[in-house]
Length: 347
Figure 1 (spheres, rainbow, N blue to C red):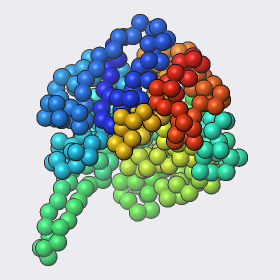
Figure 2: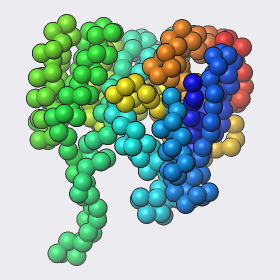
Figure 3: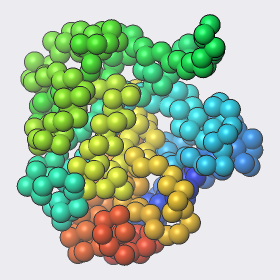
Figure 4: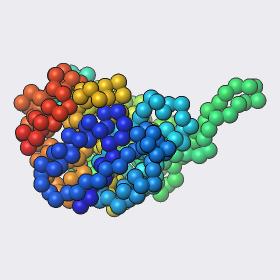
C-alpha cells in the first residue's frame, strides 16, 4: 500500500520523519513517496499544492501530512498562502469528516491545565465537518464601504446534505464508543446552526440506540473545562470544531499529543497532528512527534486496515510516556529524534 508523505513547513518534516520511522519498524510492506506542500512547495514550484503533489495524494492509499505555515509567505495573495494546500486537499479529495480524539494519558494528567482528577476523565472524540462552513463559503473578500471604511466579509453556509453526512459519521462513531453524541452549534443566533440542529435531529431517528444532546458552542467550551468527562462524541461544524479541538488538546496536556484523521466517504484519509508548523522552533529538534506518530496509528486503523498495528503504536506511545519520556512541551528535555527513539524502543 502506498502512503503519500507530505511533510510541509516548519516542524512538519521533523515530526513526520519520526512517524515514518515507526511505520517502517512495523514491517508491514508499506511503500512511501514524498512530495512538497505548503510554503516549501510555493518556494520550489510557485504553488502551495502543485499538480504533482495532488496527483500523489490521489494515487495514495493514505496521506501522512506534517504542517503548513511559513512567515515568509504571509504577504502572498491568500490563494497562494501555504494554508491553501490543506484546504485544497480537503476540497479536491472530498475529505469531509475530521476525527480528533482527545484522551488523557494517565502519566500526563499533571501536564494538563486542569486539575488532575478532572483531566483524568477525558476520553472524547470530536467529529468536525471539514469542507463547508465559513472556511469555504462564498462570497468572501474585502471591499471599501460607501463611507470609505475597509470591510472584510465571509459567508457561513451549510446545506442539509452536508450536515446529514457528518451527522451520520458522528452517530456511527458514538455507536462504536459509549453511545452518546453531543451536537454543538449556535442555533440561538445563527440560521446556519438552526439548519444544523434540525437536520441532526432528523438523522437521529435512524440511531435510536445513541443518546443525542445539543449544546451551544460557548457552553461546550465551558463544559470542556468544567466537566470534560461528560463528553463521548462531539459533532460540530468546521469553525467550532477547529476551536474546540485545540481547546481539548490543552485539557489533555499539550497540543503535541493530539492526532487527527480527515476521511472521505470511502474511508481514505489524510492524517496529521492538530498542531501547526511552529516556525519559532523549526529545525531545532524541539518538536514533540507524538501527535504525528499517533496520527500514523489512526492511519493504520482507519485507512490501511491494520487495527492491531495501530494498537501497538498507541501502546508504545503510552509506555514511553509511562517510562518518563518527555519533550520540552511536556516539561522534559528530550529532543524530537530522542522521543522517536523511545517510542521505537517501546514498540
